Image (cartoon, rainbow, N blue to C red):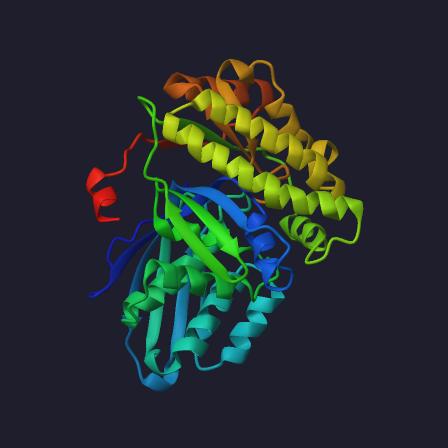
Length: 387
């Protein structure tokens, strides 16, 4: 965990927290559904997402000084505790865009700042400081760490400059900021803006995003997950480049199978998962996970064999096929863009979480884990009467 604390925040400062985002099911269908704008025969995209308890904590405030010296002073703390500070000239949108397009450590900050300046120019009337003093969200492990940075910057601008952005507005600003960078992720990642512990079904139709909060989660104890850093490498940019080459028109058989995977198959899979969660049926949700991962390995793996599937993600496959792991988990799958980044395991209750962690440690030497519990909840009957 990276933390240095913010012991003496400046007067008038605001504390912000932005969590990570776990895609339970539906990875890649967000950007795939976005291609409906140019090919309406593509199925809508659907993702089932949950906010993590880990994330980024920051103090944000105005900086004194003349209007002519408008800058963003950003201090970032990584999950390993490394702190870096960078100053961006808010009077020069061109330099912000150049920094974003170049990639690198600061590209997501620069890209989102560019969007805020070009969209709300007259209202960005002075300087702003963002001190991200604590981060316990792993980077490049499929938990939307880059999107969390973008949401943090958008939310900070909204609070400091009194822009009055809603959560959906912040998500849109973060998405547009991230799209200026080489990562080119879809809209699903910005669901980290909803906060920890919330489960939502997102649907993507071209540029349109619909959000349905999951209000019905059954079972006596809800659902228990362990996320584990696989300690291996993956190339998210390569994964996205290879898979997005199949869109908007499928020109090969492998591309057609990918369209079916991220379209009709994914829509049915997400619907089955929502039903299993409403009934509190962890065993059935585990079976949904198994079917989803097998189909992804086969079809996405054929399109990006160096990063996905049995050959491209051998560590993920080893964990998911472990006989000892099956004693403690109903099922599991990859996270985010998939590949050998992070695995999510649907555990057999609270005791199953401890068992999964022990197998990860003893059999695979994996000690960096995160627990996620989705508690049971039921829709307020009064909300049905008002609908």
